[in-house]
Length: 603
Image (cartoon, rainbow, N blue to C red; front, side, top):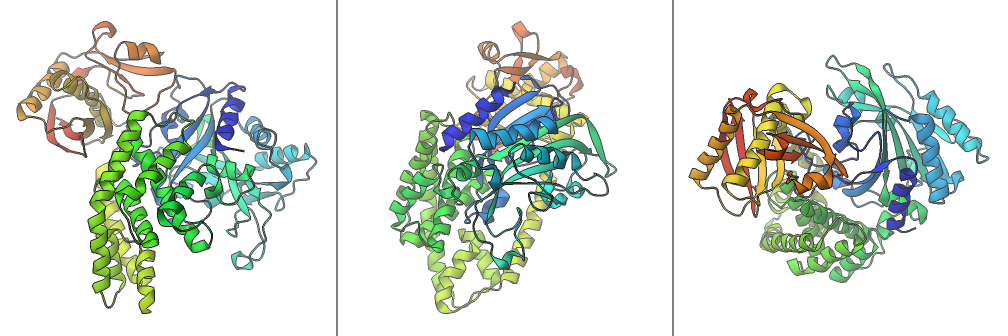
């Protein structure tokens, strides 16, 4: 079954069961400074999982674009990707386990036609804080019984600890920060029926790494929240958060263990084969082709959502993807130019032609962005390879320097030196890498602490000031300015916006003055739910690249018929601007090609 059909069937299945179809959120999180990317379907819905009413109701369904940078090093096997689509359905305090699990089983077996005998399930085994999920076990037994299967524990139903069957953005309960929602989950695995390899353990089971089983669906019962004292408290609103990777579901319907052989990758792999001259046959070539395919696809989606290659934050991750792909292609084909990537990018765009993820304007921007980055990297790549040839003896530190300076992953450097019979000290490389990660983590903690998710008083004030700043930019500098990203902490706000040149000092002063005038006027800040078309018609601002549902939340600063600012936003904000204090812009700089960045504070 092709991906477009699986996606459509899923959305229609839950739409018939009272769910509103909501659009995918951008990969660049909106007003969530706690993370670089949208990495799951639940991430954009955190406020609603914690009790805030959603404009579209209590039953939602979507196909969410997701990106997980932590999976970069995992790419190369038959199932891991950095970019993926997560099919999701949500119950915000409405239905729970007894409705969710039968629906998912019905979708998998009747809509997708999967053989029930090839489906295995897992549940949470319980711990000191949360009991074993016996309710899900009983429901699964009834479900399987309905299709003539006796589902016994440790044969068809398996219980695992929190490491496997607990879900939150931060992992297990012990690693969840205060305020974070999470809960036990129940996963469905598809059995490909391949032989078990003894090196992975004496017996095979759903979470075995031998490749026989693939997780295709995960129902999270999000009913707990981490408290400041470290305990878990049951939420007043019990939620269902389902996630099913589209790539894996398609692979299961086609009986293919390799997601890169599905229609979501097949044309992309073919274009890389043409560029490299190598076939998708042996394991070594397959791994390299998979990495290039994944990285270019992920890069295309990141650029489409407004991210540009740079040495900072999201832009750095994007740059790493593209340059890693370039290194791989260079070593495969013995040549690497920006022109080789043009047909690969085009194949990604064609793969998603039946979706609304890209339009003609975005396509040209994506092509140009990739071509420019690859053009700039060509000289660096050649220099790096020449540098390697000069090295007579290599250790872990030198290998890490090559990784940092020229973008050469460890396995690439090893491959080049293998001919000389040299082995790299992995422990030394790991030590250098860990030092780098420690520095990065320290910087990230300083940059992200006190993020909007904590809803502290100062953060809420800066969030409101952020709206005033955008309106002032449009009135003072250019009415076509749009927000391209934001990061709001308790210490300061940061806004990215489209503009081709540096702001003049006198314009910065005028912007500050206008914002402070509106603060002094003590204007009411009012939230109103309305139809998206009506909000667009009155000129309410929306974030670039973000898709909104049919009914939206709009914050007005000033009366609706004569407002100073109106923005699509979920909040929170102060009740009136007089609470903000004095506004000051502390820095204005470039954030990439055609994008400027402003830092501002309140005092």
